[in-house]
Length: 195
Image (cartoon, rainbow, N blue to C red; front, side, top):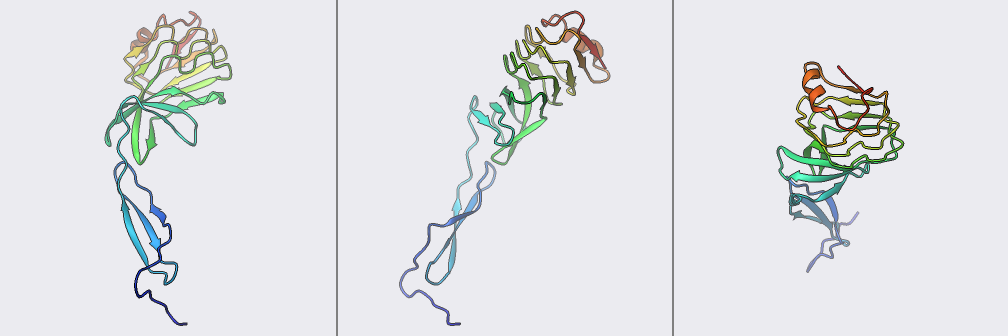
């Protein structure tokens, strides 16, 4: 039961990260003496925000996003490369990187282009922009559910080649506005915009 203490200098181990740093908070690393088991901690500086235009891959979903506005509050990203293995896809309202939540405000041009597996898509409530050819060539896409009430730009041929019997479901109160915004974007005239 004897306790040892080091007389001259501690023999510190390599240390372990006890708190990971984020873009808003410092982290900590804890070192333990291999002889007397005394511990000490060291600050790990918080991470910097990613620069505008940087691509970030979400580990769980494997979706790739591009930073459009780096900020700890009200930062935004664009979905550029979705996981194409999914037949049902939801563009989330927000994604989190390094402890910071970013609003997903756009789907980039060509994002889902020629995705043959895709059958259903839900667009998150923060989407404002759908790029050109975003869903072009998704011939099995039968249902697009729009939860955002703030879409102001839909790119050329965004829906070209989707299933001719597809439905685009939009929020209550946005039917007339979205009928205009989504008109002539490459889809067949049989594609219905409904609420």
